[in-house]
Amino acid sequence: MNAHGHSEHGLPAGRNGDDPVIAVVGAGPAGLRAVETLAAAGLRPVLIDEAARPGGQIYRQPPPGAERPAEALYGLEAPKARVLHALVPALGESIDYRPETLVWNIGGDRLDLKTARGFETLDFDRLVLATGAMDRVLPFPGWTLPGVFTLGAAQIALKAQGAAIGRRVALVGAGPLLPLVVHQYLKAGATVVAALDVTPFGAKVAALPGLMNEPATLAKGLWYTARNALAGRRIVSGVRAIRVEGEGRVTSLVWQDAKGREHRVACDAVGASFGLRSECQLADLAGVKLRFEPTTRQWIPERDQSGRTSRPDVYVAGDGAGIGGADAAELQGERAALALLQDLGRPVDAARVARLDARLARQARFRAALERAYPFPAHLLAAVSDDEIVCRCEGVTVGLLRSTATGRDAHEMNRLKALSRIGMGRCQGRVCGQAAAELLAAARGAEVATVGRLRGNPPVKPIPIREAIR
Image (cartoon, rainbow, N blue to C red; front, side):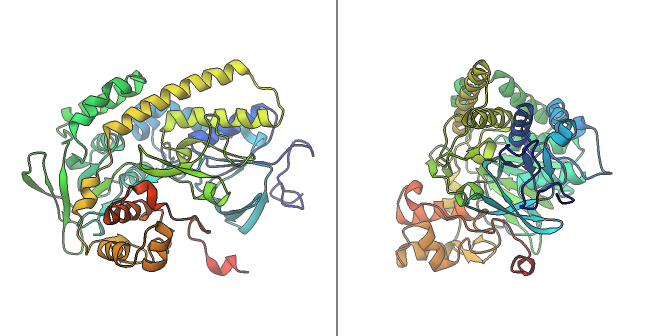
C-alpha cells in the first residue's frame, strides 16, 4: 500500500479485497449523495473532484481563510449547503476523497487523472458520473470584450472571492439563474444597472401550471423576483438585440425592449449566459450513448430514471445527465447509487426507491415547465453578424461557419470542425459547440438535432502536455 492508500496496482483500499472499485466523479449535490448512499451500504467509493472543497458550482465554498456565513453566500439555500458541506468530513475514512483531481480521459474501465502529484490512473469496476453543467454561451456583439463574463462566472467571483465582476454591472440571461444572480449581487451591495431577460414574459405565464409541480421552488423564484423589484432592479423581459460597447473593455450595454425601443446604460462589466448545458464529455468518452433533448436543444447521456446508461457499469446523475437543478441532482445521486447497489446484488429498500422515483417524476414535470418558461433565444443568433467571433480559442467567426456550412457542404458538426477548426482549441467545443450547431442548422435550413454534435476527445480540459507525454 502506498502513501495515498492505494494498492500496488493503483486500486484504492476497500474495506476488504472483494469490494468493487466504485469511482464517483464530481463532488456536487449528485456526487455527494451518491457516495453517502454507497458508504452507508458498506462500500468505500472513490470521490474525485476538481475543486479543493466539496459542494460543486451551486454550493461552491470559498478557499480556506476566506470563509463567510452560509446565509451570505447561498441565501435561502444555506441550510442545504451546510448539510452537503458536512457530508465529506462526516463520512471520513468510509470514502476515498480526492479533491483537486481532474479526470481528463476515460479509456475502457480506466480513468486518467491529473493530480497535484502528477498523472495517475484509476481502474474502476463501476463509475458514477456527476459532472454538472456550465453556462450556455451564445455570441452577441461585443461579447468578447474584457469585462464580459458568464452568469456562472459572475456567481463564482462572488462566492469564491467575495468580489463583484465590476463596479456597475449589467446582467443578461435566459433562465432561472438570472434572478438568482441579480439577487445575490444586490444583497452583496453591488450596483446592478440593468437586469435583462431575453425571453418573453408571456412564456413564463403560460408555464405556471407546470411550475406548480414544485410549489416551494416556484415560491423561491417569485421571492427572488419580488426582492429584486423592491431593491429597484426589476427584471425586464422580452429584450432583444443586446450589444456590448467599448474600446478595449466594456463601457456600456445597449438593447431593445419588447416594443423595439433602444436603451443604453453605462457599465463596466456584463454577466450574460442563456441557460445551462450538461457537461457530458466524460460520458461520451466512456462510450455512453447520447441522445438529443429537444426542450433544451442539447445532447445528453441516454439513461433511465435510475441513472443507468447504455454501458452497464456506468451511471449518470445530476445536471451532467440533463439539466434538472440542485434538488433533482441530490435525488438522482442517491437513486443512481441505489441502482448500482441493486446491480451488485446488494439489498435495497424498495419503498425508498419508489419514493425517490415519485419525487424525480415530479421534478421532471417542473423542469419541463421551467424550460418552456425560458425558451431558447434563437433571435440572438439570427441577428449576430458575420464578423463576430464564435470560437474564441481558434478565432473562428460566424461568417466563416455560415460560408463553410453552405459553400463547402458542411452538413454536420464534425465536418464543420474539420473545415473550420471550430472546437479544436482548449475548450474542445464546450463553450462554442452549441452555438456552432445552432448556426450550422440555421445556415442549412435544418433542425439542430440533425447536424449532430462534436465528438468528445481527450483531454476534456487543458492539461500540461509536457508531463502527459512522459
